[in-house]
Length: 186
Image (cartoon, rainbow, N blue to C red; front, side):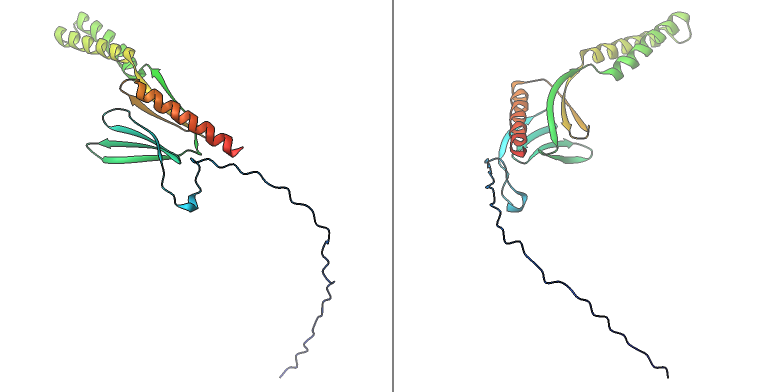
């Protein structure tokens, strides 16, 4: 059997000293607005504004989030919730539809040339030419698009049937609430 020598180490510490000078605390100014709630309070959200975009989409602005509710025959109902802290802007702009413009611009002249050259049947070529021209017209008519801009360059775009007074009021209420939230955060 081996003998083990245990060695003990003792450390010395100095007696702690405390600063006896008291520094005065500066009073902090808190502002509170009725539209700002802490998450841990579990308070109900109050609806600020609501608007129907089209037959399938519905916008709801609460004091905490912007909700977009869409319904579709195939995949049912979905709700996109964007907290107001992440939304930086909202706008409705007129957009020309590029995809129908490009497809119609390619199909119409090629079908007309093919029909006149005899490469395809004449009436089929004329039908394709008229279809291409109608696509060009549809793309040129365009549509309004509601664009929700989030931080970090994320954007969500929704087509709007018409730019109505309700949509303009909803955009204005959203901008006011975003400006209020930004003032509170500063």
